[in-house]
Image (cartoon, rainbow, N blue to C red; front, side, top):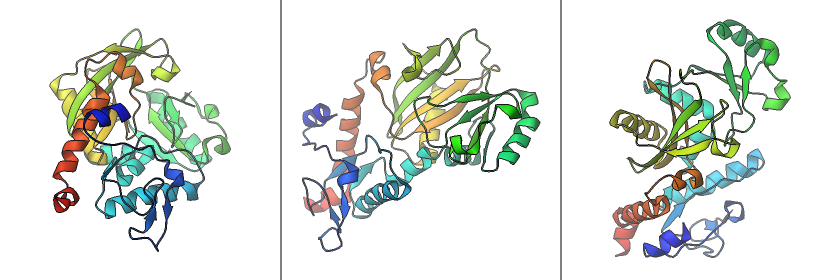
Amino acid sequence: MESAFAAAGARAARIDLAACEFDTRSASGLALPLLESRLPDAVHVRTLSAGSFEAVTKRLGVLHALAELGVVVWNNARAIERCVDKSMTSFLLGRAGLPTPPTWTIESATAARALVEREAARGPLVLKPLFGAQGKDLRLIRRPEDLPDPESVAGVYYLQLFQRTGTQDFRDYRLFVVRGHVIAAMMRRASTWITNVKRGGRPLAFTPDASMQRLAIAAADVVGATIAGVDVLVTVDGAPTVLEVNSMPAWSGLQKVSAHNIAEAIASALMDELDRSPMRRRAR
């Protein structure tokens, strides 16, 4: 990304959100590494490191503050919050009428067991960490006894009805959306139901049709994400359904099977957005 921004004519500095501070005595109300009280023209958020609830809240607060100050932030804190919390992503997708698996988020272990007892007749359920990525700690739940103790899921059970594809292997699709356009896509194929590249899934070149592209763009728009990795699965009846929307997507596997330079596309789009921003126009 640093090379891509340099090629687009921007000077990029890598800054850890954990090192950014609020300082109400400064002109901006913030104190940022390298910049002190000055503000960047734009921020591209690549990752939000783990930490205490208070630490993560403060880091998101810095992003909220930057946006309040007129800085272009991709993705902004609101989009990150909506995607990091899988239950909110599912809520927004369902409320917008976009196809997504039946999903439940429950704190009570007793209620979760009752849900599995009721729904498992339709097929197994997938238990995911509410805050998780890259296919870590996914479990297939076929009966109430398969549910772990509340402590191992941080007290929250996020469950989705398992979606069958009707194919001999397991496959799904990642569509990479930047500012309302799908710029790259891949199929992920695996011998197990967990298809994430980090878990052994194989990325393959793939060209989504217009309807799948529209679905991915709509999913990104619903959560307010300018940059999004949208995971789509085609069910046994041939209908695409959105599994997740990622606001800080990795793309190393995707880049291997895409002719489109993803970093350059992001840098170019961000520079174009920056040229249109009121802050930049006022500075001219």
